Amino acid sequence: MKLFKIIFFALLIHFLMSSNNCKKGGHGDNRLTIVNNSNASIFTLLQYNYPDTSINDESWSYLAYNYLVVESQKTEKLWNSIKWDKVIQNKNEHNMLTVFILDNEIVNNTPWAEIQSNYLILQRYELTIEQLDDMGWRVTYP
Image (cartoon, rainbow, N blue to C red; front, side, top):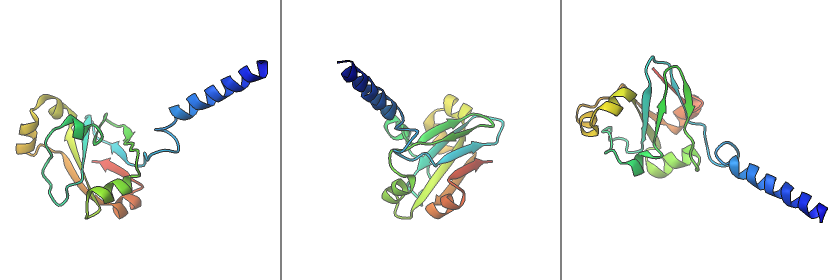
């Protein structure tokens, strides 16, 4: 009976530890890294509609997996359950990822329609998978 309890708890601990590592470990892809070298917090938006360079409508179902806020002088990774190159290939026939950098304060205090119509972006990067590979999947602003 004691051996059964030990095995049960060992398996339970193993299960809990392996399920907790999904984002960090062997599943998914966290190569895509945003480096913010500016003195302000930035809002990073990913889009796959190249060659269209307009900013998509704000939709939290869309934005949920396609944006990241990066504080000043910080680096953050974007995680995806599928390899980033596969995501880009599946969503864009040009194999191009568009990365918009916006001032996070403007995003928080300005209606999205105004951000779109006035194109209130700080920077736009249009990157191929090959360019991302060459950059080590690090997008640095500025």
